[in-house]
Image (cartoon, rainbow, N blue to C red; front, side, top):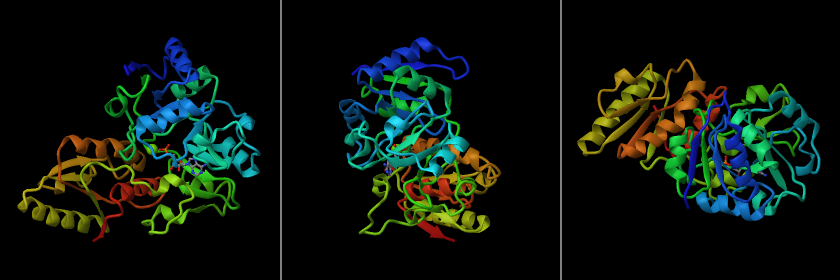
Length: 349
Ligand code: AMP
Ligand code: MG
């Protein structure tokens, strides 16, 4: 398949392009597009055949449901009822990086929800995404625009790398502002439960439901008989080709331990990648060192994380050693993605 790639600017949107891409969606095709979380791979959420193409293009397991994206607050057609708490979350945080799980209506095909009776819905704030949804005149089912298992794309180059030749259209915009996938909150339970941490944090959600809690699978390695609430939780995710090890503890001890282990690897003729920060990068004197940004801005770290993880694939490293972050605010989402990319290979220092 020949993929059409077009770059547009969020502050000067060319509606001719978005109308054309909207028609592709309407006609059952696939369009990758920017959002503030990560780039999405979209199809008409109400068209079973179109949605099947997403699973094929990504190599995504069919029991991993898709999030549907809307540009309008009227979501009545897609859900059976809207709990009060969901209304509050929508009013406070939409458009933005948070997905709400609710009971689905019959309009949502079972392929979209992966045979669940619920559906995840989000309203992106990225203007290109919003205009594309409007132009398509439907809800757009869109997982991240990567091959399943790889770190999500946060820029158009990463999208092209994974999907060129597999989709009809790729729309490029600016780098994703948040850089991590949306927070997912289950609104069918009382209190509500966070299934995936993201840009809208636990602390922020406490202002809506003071009893909101994190699903136990978020911070610990799933056990053998683990039955995930969100099917996606059980799959290997965000993984570069090389294995990742996370080092957790005081920063001075972390640096010392990474340097010590690095010497070992180098003696064994291995190429080592290091994921550091602006404050620590000068203390490593070997290996391929990449900084995620300053520890003063967890938002910047989140924004750069997937790009840095993906970039090690072209460096041919044998192992990646990575510093940990405090699990506060967006730090919880950062550590959730890092822990998964490392398969919970964590070394306490
Ligand atoms: P991605 O599209 O790659 O961001 O992944 C979407 C995530 O949302 C997956 O982990 C899914 O399991 C989760 N998800 C989507 N819909 C539902 C749902 N109805 N119930 C629970 N989790 C969901
Ligand atoms: Mg994904």
